[in-house]
Image (cartoon, rainbow, N blue to C red; front, side):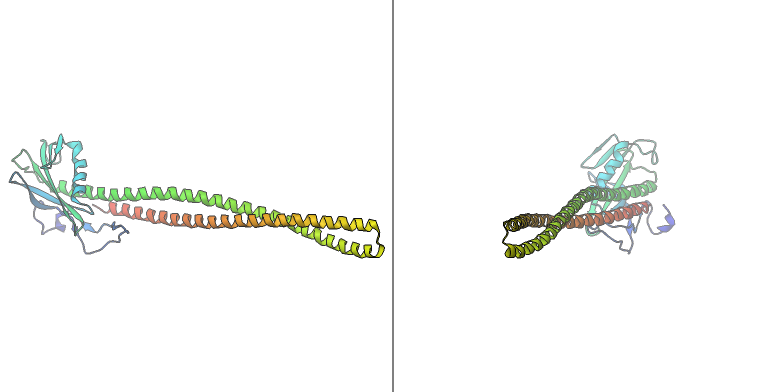
Length: 297
């Protein structure tokens, strides 16, 4: 820690002091930039009416429970035991402070208005004797690690959201592809039916012409053979009209399916677009949080 940056702080002081800058925040209030400064303040922890000299650090965007949980994770690997009431770690091995095993007392408080937690630690040689070594650097480094851990928790939370959004996007993309396939198939079916209808309508136009000619001819000849040909032509026309009616019904059905598939496609396209937008936003937030974490030092 550069002590020339904090000339007015008393010896053994480390608190994270906020600046006047307000960092951009997410919708849930997570700050996307680190605009704090790490420092250490001196205080006390009282156990059984006895005060022990302590150091206090600030863990931003956290409450006391979170700060203490992070401290427990920090101390568990180097402690024989950690107990509550009072919160106390025994058999603590901190070679940067002492070659002997230590007792560490801890206390945490929440400052709701500021949205921070204060964590105080007292280092003891035994139940009544405080450690004489300077713990300021240890506390400073601890403040860095705990605040980085808080941000890592934020990163993990948004990464979880990103993973879920990625799954939703993949599902929407699959649904969109299926809808596109259905639309393409319906369009092909519709074009085939229209082509068939066009051929029948063209054939009907020829038959109509034939019927007109045969009617005129039969009116002149009254020949049974001409009547037979006329009857056959009329039968062909009636058959074609029946086929045409069925084709038009099929067209209407396929057109209805096409409209439904197009509506489904629009819905899945919209969902995929929303998920893609959310994915990009979450990726941006995670990138900014990683930069934020790197700036904690």
